Length: 385
Ligand code: HEM
Image (cartoon, rainbow, N blue to C red; front, side):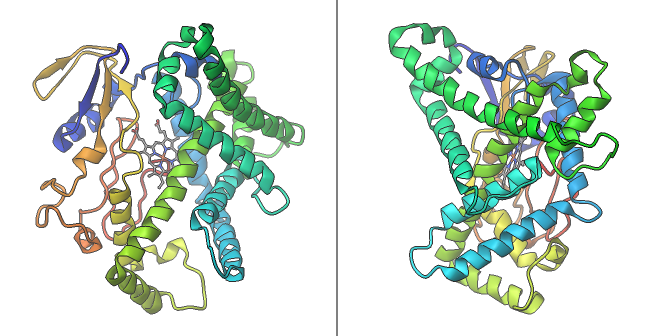
């Protein structure tokens, strides 16, 4: 990566052995100077490292899990969107653009989890503005010139590159400013006498208050909040919306699978009510279809980079401290991997996923958990990935 040597680990056994069992050795991150400049430091989750990463990841998982407990705020927000999406679809006759529908529905859920409100016709312009900036962000970052300016921000002082760097910075800063404005509005009405919270920002601000006498608010600085909002928006929005879109396309292209999905829905749910999370253990075929669509779509083909925090040895190779390293899960979870698909390597239909222990493999560090989703078994592990 530019002038940084980078190691990819693509063997499932090695990923498991090192990134799960010795996860603490991989909690560093390479720093992208332009990102640090915009974020004002290694804030957030996606680009933080070490103790901050562990603390903030744990806090975020805790809050998001909490939304799934008790009155299940998470499910409530999702079902509100599903109901609204179905109503909108009923009114449409031709030219249904499912990508936009998924985008705005998922955007609403994430915004509601973060700030407590969804998007409808009264504030759709705000969603479109956010989405436009996100799209621009990804586009700019993926261009070769974006990569160059990202790695060497001093290029931004040269005539040709300066305009480009300004566009990247202004676009991203616009998003951070939007998130800060939301947080400040919340601050003006927050009730610190109550421990309750109904969205992520409120939970963060209440936690910040508890740390107000510690240096840097104990890791709960406003810059951290700006960045984590950005991370949850970018990491949650496109991934989920595109997963839905790809799943729809794969199922449409496989009429036999679609037929079985309908059969399962008819027999297990019927037509007079909406599906809820509690139906999940009964929907083996649908779970398998979703898993297989996710594997095929391979939405994030390159995992996030880490750096080694000590010298390590992987597969007989010595890798020094501070080396950029990536566990490449997509190459491990390929149809040809006999370890993950013992009796049917290469099988590409959901039935392959119906056998116990044939679900997703997810990888984390010592501070994460690996989740094996078997048929319909509740995924009690990660919420974030
Ligand atoms: C189908 C939907 C999703 C897919 C396929 C997906 C996939 C992934 C993958 C592959 C990673 C990289 C893991 C790594 O290399 O360490 C990741 C990280 C992450 N995802 Fe997701 N994700 C999805 C939904 C979400 C949602 C809904 C959120 C939050 C609202 C989210 C938040 C994050 C965050 C914060 C990280 C960084 C974790 C870390 O660095 O520790 N993701 N996701």
